[in-house]
Image (cartoon, rainbow, N blue to C red; front, side):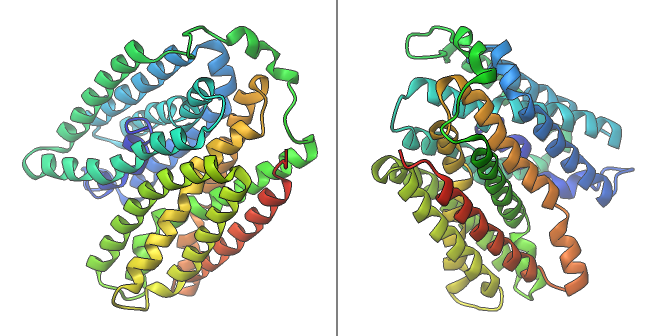
Length: 375
C-alpha cells in the first residue's frame, strides 16, 4: 500500500509543480499526467477478477509492484508529455493490480473474521506515504534533479517487489485457491442483484464526494482568503487524522460489527464535511478541528469499502465484489475530478461543491446503511 497506492497517488502531488516546469510541459499537460494515471488505474481495477484468476496473490502483487517500479523508472527519464503519459499508464496499472484491491483479496484469504483491524493497519501504508514521501522528494530536489527523485522511488519499489515475492503466501497454508475461484462467474452474493448494484451506486457516490474533496482541500482554504501556511497545515492535519482513523475504524468494525461501525464512520464523515464548509472563514483552532474530523471520517473510503467487499461476498464471488466496489469508488472520483474547478469558476468558491458532496455522502450513507445485510 505504501508503494502501489502511496507512490502513484497519495504522495504524487508533490511532483506537480516540478512536472509543469519541465521544458515543453504546461499546467494542462500536468493535469493530463494525473488523469491518465487515474484512468489506467480504473481500467486495471475493472480487470482485477480476471487478473487474480490468472495469477495467484503472490505473483499478482509482485507483477503489479514491478509495474509501479517500471513506471517510476520511466518517470525518471521523462522529458516530454508522451513519455510522462507512458509512465502514468504503467504506474496506474501497478496501482490497479497491486493496490487496495490486492490488499483486500489477500487479507480476506488470511482472516476468516475480524478483518477490519488488518484492513486498518494495512491501509495506513498509503497515508504514511502521503506524509513521508513528499519530505524525501523535496530533500532530493533541493540538491538534485527531478529524475533522481523518481529514480529513488523506482529502486525502492523494485526492492519491495522482490521482498513481497519472497514473503507473501496466498493463504495460511500457502496453497493456491484459483480452482475454487473458477466458480466465480455465477457465484452468489449476500444481496439480491438489484440491491447489490444499488449498493455499488452508493459506493460510486462516496467516491465522487470524497476523492475530489481531499485533493482540493488546500485550495478550498486559499480561495476563501486563508493564509497559504494554514492551507498547507490543515492538509497535513487531515492526513494524520486519516491514518489514525483507519486503525480506529478497523477496530470499530470488528468490535461493533460492520453495520454499526459504518454508521459511526458516516456520521463523523458527514460532520467533518459540513464543518469544513465554514472552516475557511474562521481562524484559531476551528479549521484544524474540522479538517481532523473530516480526515478521520474519510477512513471509511478505504477500510470501510474493503470490509464491505468481504461482507457482501462469498469466497467464490469475492474477486468480482472487490472489483465492483473499487471500480465504483475510483470511477466516482474520476468523473467528478474536474467538477470542483468548474464550480469555482462559476461561483468564485469551492464551498458549493463541498456542500454538494456532503449531500452525496448523505445519500450514499442512506443507501449503504439501508441495504447492508442484517445477517
